[in-house]
Image 1 (cartoon, rainbow, N blue to C red):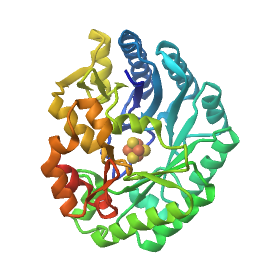
Image 2: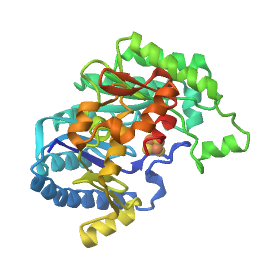
Image 3: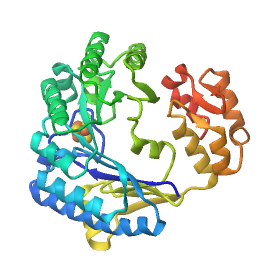
Image 4: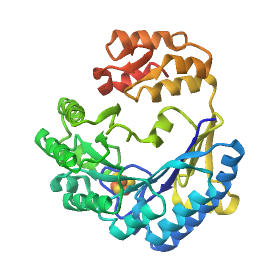
Length: 384
Ligand code: SF4
């Protein structure tokens, strides 16, 4: 049994961003925010107790913990302490586990970050997104570029030596010069890890509405591709290893938690909308925080969907997720896991990807080509 990943979802944010369709809500949207947050944390702790018993039964150690959201750092110091210490106490956590907390600029200060370090958090992931104030305003972010710079330095002073920053490109109105300046600015901090995401205009979000009504022009597709490759080339030149479609790391600082997902190893998700994958079964929790907390209170579970994976489902998911990693999928590991060769299971999909120049063999590993990285959906669709 490989180690377990553990994800804890905090769905609250100080403000909902204009492009966001994640399972998150603004604290202001509740009349009784304090009560909802306290009730939610209570439910999380109950779910943690129940799920930790299941983890112990499996005999597996938790090797990565990830508090994501939403914005975990919009919780008070007291709530963060209570939550993180309880999770680390009830689960069988490996002594060298990677423990990440997502943070947003404007919700952290030296006391809160010092506390996170003191209670065992090893890694911080900061949502910087852009170092251009007008683009941050277009995204509806609740912080400025100088807040981001301050947050990064405060995190270093608090002792974080493993920091990731998230950046977004293909923002309506963003030109190549803006993107280059954000990349250069981020490189000046020298974070250990950088994630770069092309903005998705999600239907129903305010930014999608602005583009649909013609108030904002969407980013040109060719420009988006050029922005992707600019990030790849610039970050690689600066010593970062491109290890997943959207992720770059200094050697040894790859996100261990996300690698659990990309290898389809077992993980447990706690909280509203969280997913788990244990014993070949994928489960999802209710997404609405109030529904979630009521359900945990009444029955101890908030699972609303579960799906048992057949061997064929598992093989195809291993290919689709595994190809996200730049090193690709090992033929040998695939055969050991499933007792069948990758070429026998997916001969047609592989041949098609090779012929289109989207896939290539690197010794015994099948991986995306440089072109395939940008057209990954096309390549992966063949493995469904
Ligand atoms: S901070 Fe993140 S989760 Fe919260 S609204 Fe903005 S994009 Fe969504």
